[in-house]
Length: 67
Image 1: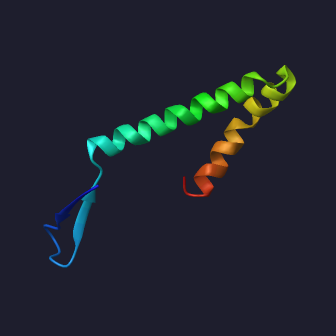
Image 2 (image 1 turned 180 degrees about the vertical axis):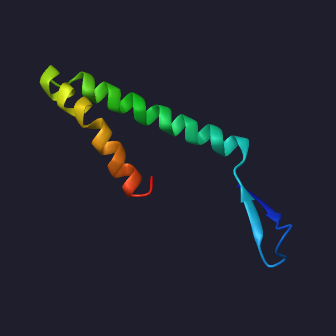
Image 3 (image 1 turned 90 degrees about the vertical axis):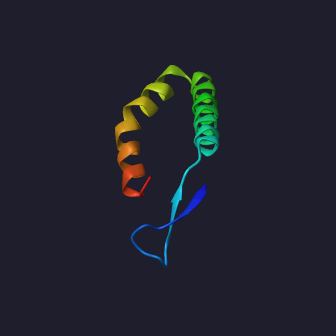
């Protein structure tokens, strides 16, 4: 994170994400996806199908939770 004095409010600071932090977040997301894919590959086909069908509802849940 980088801090910068606000140009509109002298009492505030603006924060921005550094390129290094963005790369770290991308690596974290990739690792999470790979772990999930590996775990799903070990499930029986019926269970994989059930989870795949539930993805839209799970995406709505994440949105509802603010993610």
